[in-house]
Every structure is written in C-alpha cells, then in structure tokens.
Image 1: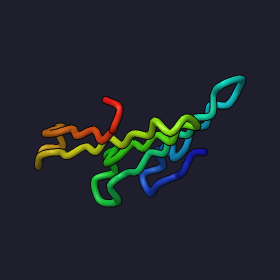
Image 2: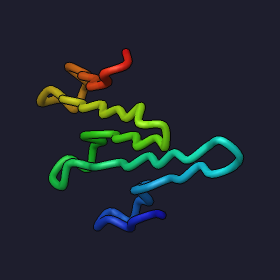
Image 3: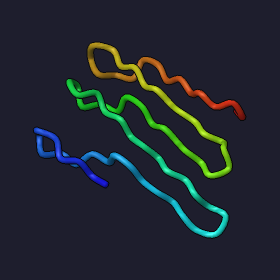
Image 4: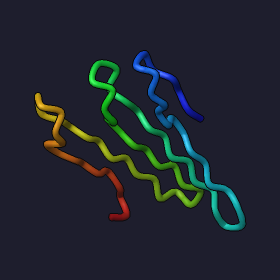
Amino acid sequence: MFLLNRKVQLQLSTRNFTGTGTNIQWTYTYDPTSKLLAQVALVNGDGNNSTVAYVYDTYKRLSSQTEDNSYA
C-alpha cells in the first residue's frame, strides 16, 4: 500500500510477503513533520518479530538506529 503525502511523494506503508512457509508483513512509519522514515516493523508468521527505529539530527542525517529483536 502506498500513501500520498502533501509533497506528492509516494511512501510505502505496508508490504506483505506470502507463500509456502512465508508469512511476513513489513510496516513503515514516517515522521509527520520531516517525512523521514521513523520506524520499520516486521511481523513474521514464525514469531520472529522485529522493530527498527531511526533518529535523525537537525540536518536530517541518520544519527542512530535501534533494533528490537529477541532473536538477534
């Protein structure tokens, strides 16, 4: 699924992968002010879920990335 923001840019909000032995959903969250990617969440059918959060400095450069995954 794609969302249209005010600057007429397409942003991916979710992406699904399904098939034999595969059931994965990626969800993308964007900062409403900067329009930069803020978080990516992975929901996996086998329970190996993950979340990655992104933080940017005042110049919109990536300053940190944090992954939450109990299997990593």
